[in-house]
Amino acid sequence: MPGSVTSMSPPDALPQPAPDAVRRWHAVVDCADPARRSALLSDLLADDVVFRSPAVHRPQEGRALSTAYLEAAMVVLGPTLTYERELVTGDSACLEFRADLGGVVVHGVDLLRWDEDGRLVDFTVMVRPMKGLQALVERMAEQLR
Image (cartoon, rainbow, N blue to C red; front, top):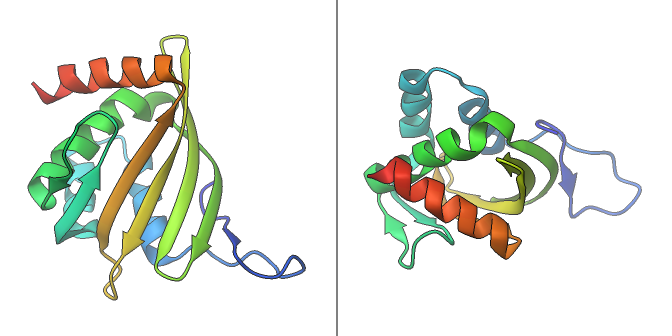
């Protein structure tokens, strides 16, 4: 659930508000207007951000490439993407999600790390099961053509 955070705090500690970078990422995900979403992404990603995905072998370096992959992911996963849990510590977060790709449920995590200005410098996606990953790779390839 966006905005609620489970941190690495003692068990009796109250949940803390999500860090700015996480709130801004949720704003990107929730934005239905592609032009506005692109602007939000541009503002959120650091110039030297690195994007890692199971859909591609090599890390995608820089804002332009990372934006292209994240925008494609929003088209592919966005309509059914639901964040279920968030774990935050220091300058990093792990956001657990599910999405339905035409009857194949994808379960994954987004690993985010941000700099002192609150811009994302590292974005890694991990997805399971294999059938879901295969469906994701195929649909991402269509979007990135």
